[in-house]
Length: 333
Ligand SMILES: NC(=O)c1ccc[n+]([C@@H]2O[C@H](COP(=O)([O-])OP(=O)(O)OC[C@H]3O[C@@H](n4cnc5c(N)ncnc54)[C@H](O)[C@@H]3O)[C@@H](O)[C@H]2O)c1
Image 1 (cartoon, helix red, strand yellow):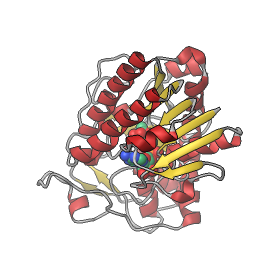
Image 2 (spheres, helix red, strand yellow):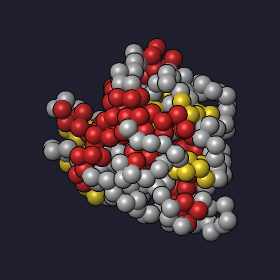
Image 3 (cartoon, helix red, strand yellow):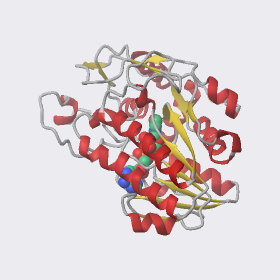
Image 4 (cartoon, rainbow, N blue to C red):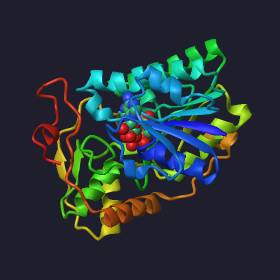
């Protein structure tokens, strides 16, 4: 089969591309390199540095493609509160353009990476068909993109599946981004002998998926006939832990003496977020194969092998306001 992966130089996209290459499939990928790393790309991928908003490029790259995996996004949920135009462009508009290209080229299936941000502060564990109440521009753009995927695909006869991942962890994740990837940020800091920074009281709770436990169900979403038209959470519903507990587990793995730096909470940060994996278990035979500790250890090993890095404040803050965390304005992370 021939697959097109957007955001192929990013974390999830590059792991998907690895899996397709390992399965002897043809893989085409694009990335605008706003967040990716060319080192992440597997040998054998046909890669073009292109923005998903470039419709002509998307039409060229989706020629003869069977399945599109749309992973490209700027997924900085916390920053989206202050940079809604950036997030709208790289979540919603980029989806519209890739969809237009996919429909033009009669792609068979479109697998869309949405986000648990669609549920906002709804009751946990989140189930796919509960009312959606996104609370920030990222969640709103992801939800709007889902509506667009359904609409365009239904009109033009393209099968679609909407994947709703948790926080994903694992090697190749960008660990110098001060705006997202909490586990990687903490590990990058602790390996430099620096205390982790925690927003609010650290009682926010999350689940974390190891990347392979996300890639395996995603591949099934691209290929199994009976999941067309479905929206499915992917990731474990076990090991639901607070951010403070996450810091302790990492500190234990690193034998680090923990005394976290507590800073004011961030506007609109969701308090409790975990998804039910029942539908994934039923439709995709989902099972968690890597524990949280094993997943965190793999990041420790990855960062140790590649070296710690200073944080790169690579994205613009559009709304200058006293609400912007000082961690970003004063570059404290
Ligand atoms: N990682 C997570 O915890 C997580 C959780 C839920 C959902 N998701 C979703 O999964 C997808 C992949 O996330 P990730 O963690 O791999 O992020 P990532 O930042 O590592 O990868 C995304 C890639 O998309 C590229 N990109 C951004 N805008 C683009 C554009 N307009 N055109 C082309 N390329 C563009 C970036 O350069 C980056 O390489 C995203 O859609 C994200 O919203 C991720």
